Image 1 (cartoon, one colour):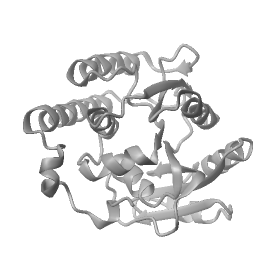
Image 2: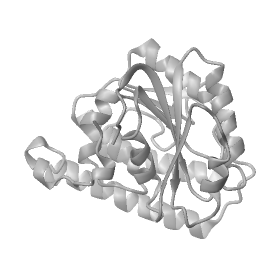
Image 3: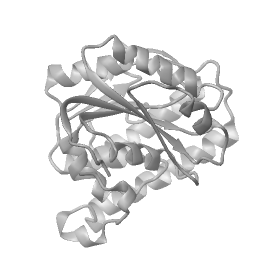
Image 4: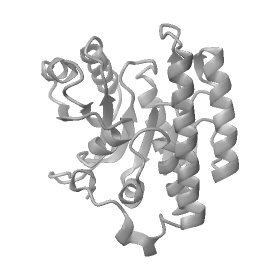
Length: 265
C-alpha cells in the first residue's frame, strides 16, 4: 500500500522482474536514462518476483539511483501479481509497467506517456501491430498472438489489436477501481485488467507503437504451447466471471480477494 502522498505530476514505472540477474542492472539503468530525457517527473519501482530464484534482487539493489525503489517477496507469484504489487506502492497519478529483459525498447515509455496526453486516455497499450511499431518477432509466436487476439476480440469486444505486449500506462483513477476486483496473478492478467476497465466505463483505451526485438530468444514449443493453453484457459475464466457470474460487479464486492499487500489507496 502506498504510504506517501500521491503526486499529480509523477509517473510511476513498474518493472516486474523474474530471473533477470544477468541483465537487470542494465535494464534499470536504461529505463532511468530514458526517463531522464523526458519532460516527466518519475519514479521506478522494480518488483523482484521471488527472491529465491536467482540474484536479481541483489543485483538491482546495487544500483544507487535516486529515483529507483527495489521491492520483493520470497516466493514467485507471477507477472500479474508482481505488477499489481508495484502499482499499489506507486505514488504517481499515471502508472506504467514495462517488462524487464528489454525485448521492448524502453524509449517506448515516453511514447505511451505522450499518447496518454494527446488522447486524454484512460489507458494506453503498447502494441506490436501499431502501424508505426518496429517488430522482429518469431513467426510461430506471431501466429499464436493473432489467434489469441481474435479470441479476446470475440469474448470481450476490446478494440485493441494487441493486449499482451509488456508496456502499458494507466490513469491512477482506473487502477483504483479495477485492481481490487482482479484475480489473475499470471497469464491473462492484461486481459482481465482491460476487460474490467471497459466494463466499468473506461473506454478511452488507445494504442501506441513499440519497438520489439525477440531474435535473441530461443523458441521452445513445449513451453510456449503450455503457456498458450494456460493463457487461453485463464482468459475463458475471466469471461465466465465477467459475463456469467458477474463477479466483477459492485454487488459482489464482498467476494473480491482481500490481500493487504495488493490494496491500492
